[in-house]
Image (cartoon, rainbow over all chains, first blue to last red):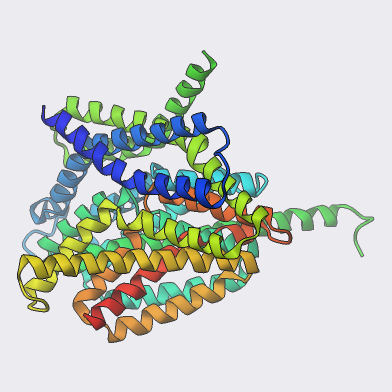
Length: 268
Length: 243
């Protein structure tokens, strides 16, 4: 009964998310563009798929993965547990005693990003548009590495208590420098990937981790430090996606150079 | 039959997408925390729902969200009516954001914080109007972002100047905005880009860039999402300064 109710309420909230969009599209199609929607039946079925898909996805996450993920975040950030993993009994915990937290932060950041539906959508489009130069998996893994690094660094920041804006401003500066050197075709896509990572799957789990850490470490405010992680998770993918493109370009250049060296007719 | 087989394929892909989470959770639960998983049955059942949901969503993506976004982009490009294109862009940004459940939650939370701080009166009416004001602010911000982004695609202006300007704006406003609004402002940049909006907006941008001569869909077509996550931060900080 509880489950049915949950299913129903999620379906309603998904519907309220989709309906305005459908209304706007329909209104403009009929009133402004004055044309029928091509393959109307197939599109409508597709919209129903989106509805069913998002509802099942959210209910599944909330019923199973989120509670367990949050419980794990709590258990891992418990000072008792952290003490049990280090030998130095009695002394206060140092930042390098939190190894499992950094690993968990990176792993959960990576794996939730891989499952993020919005990122899948952007990766499919990027693959189509780039003529195959950007692979769906290549982009997703690049973004996931960025999120993993960002969240691990974010937990380090909470543990050490260094101010958030130092990190964000240095991050911005690195992004700007990379923008100058990265291939032009990747820049817009890289900026976009910063926005799509912080979505359905990643935010609740990462917020639970931040909250757990901030409430067990003395002197941290859960309210302020919980959100810091999300900011990290949307900054670092920009760098890793540009890095991914730079790496690809560099490898291509090396390959070409090697070819020219071996080919006596081309050497000059 | 082929439909069924195609769906089975999508299902397998979804399973693969979810495998990393399953591995991570399993590893930490068994090796690090060393405790049995509470309610294993419920966990498996939930995971099954997630896989099924992802498979449905990806099908719907290819069948509805992508084609519709592109078809609208092509129609507008053919009609070459700038006014209606920009009106559509604003409506899409505003309309998808105002109803976003995550934003409603954040706005209500923000009103509570503001009331607890004594920033606004701790009455339900004041809190409701504060929350509504915040939601409207974010929705207008996203509408403006999509309009600016579409205009950029039409002109083919390089995106980095806009982002650079946005970053500078965010940094300056962070310095002058009231501290209690900053966290909410940064958060609101993330909640606006929902799972339904992203594919639609991406298809719109890419569709526009491919149907206009001299635009490259990869260079010019992306970037709408980046705009939509940048403007809410500035608009919400401005809201915090005014209210």
